[in-house]
Image (cartoon, rainbow, N blue to C red):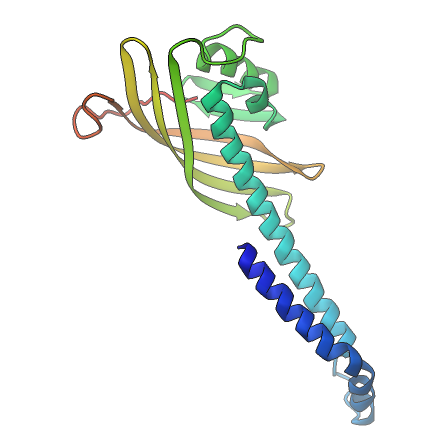
Length: 214
């Protein structure tokens, strides 16, 4: 995506260099030719600049949302519950297998108590636990206006503790995002179970729905 933007910028710069010196000439020629409908070169350039600026902003927004969601996965991996909670809006709603949690405080408590198995304020996963939680295959759509967006991600996870418990898990996140003061956050999160399977056998045997998830 960055390469596409760079290519557009190079094209725009070349157009600017070619068009600006001749703007007066083109405008005069249009007037002399009696072409009242002809747009001045400066107006054409401004329109192209506006379009390019909108495309770059949209691209930056998509990259920011991808960074947000990957941060979510990493923070869950490491039991950084305050950091995970800060990725949500104050009025967020999170629909997890453990229940529906409404509002920032409710989501924060869920992360500590249900996902982390800790008391409020206790960071981390506890001794011997693993919660690797990869968010992959993003599909992101920006809504008109650039203040909200929708995303779909696949979660592939390895959960377990020592001794005695290890599973593979997979599921789908469908998420609505909102931009607040220039920062993208999660406004609504829905997680749909895919499968869970014991590590020892893999997903080829014994796979079942209802995989654990945050």
